[in-house]
Image (cartoon, rainbow, N blue to C red; front, side, top):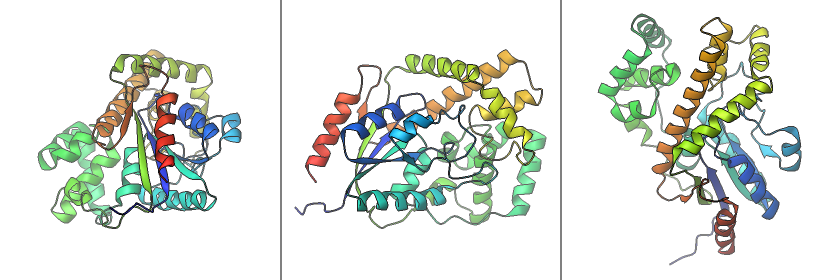
Length: 315
């Protein structure tokens, strides 16, 4: 059997509020790694408190690539992430270090390692019609339609995730094939790095749910609503942008629009964050080649460090 000569890389994955950033920084203090963020909210400047962005002191000690690289007025795609992440990984590898990619955006991890399938380009007329239909019958009804046409895609897309629902239905109309089928195509070339996957995956959700609520209350105390208000006051942002649809920001924007009271806003944001964590954990369970670390059983640093040491020792 020939040895795998590809350089090493590490994926540290997990649901929101599972302690990924802290663990990544601890590993960076012990091993020659360079950190790369895999988070669809952290790419945006100005999304700080609500996105749980590492603070300035943390980033000064443990810099992360792909944080604060895009203005929230400019959408950022999985294809762009793949190109940027590969460039960051190559730079880290060229420095004699190991890329450690940390985050919870499964689409980004999947696009990076498996590539992106060739999907049809957007059709403004179809998108406009789907938007009109959704305004009439609601996005949950559009989700029910997608469930009939593409159950696999519907299972991983939320009933109110307007952008992804619209795209999935659009692709079906343009190609005549389910989005999930097209996405399985991907690219055939081998990923340039051999990867150790570490997944922070709690067996019991209740402690994670409690941490999500506690963290959101801390965000509120730290001025999260002022952050959302500052984004609104810019005047060039709107609720349909991917940055503003990020969990917490969407609910904050709606609250500042006059939808509901403060208690209802808090409940909706925490519920949406729990739903995000649920989707992330569902995706992680399908990553069968990942080494699972339960953050609730014991501090995962020892087990993670042992796995990294063994992995790098075989280089």
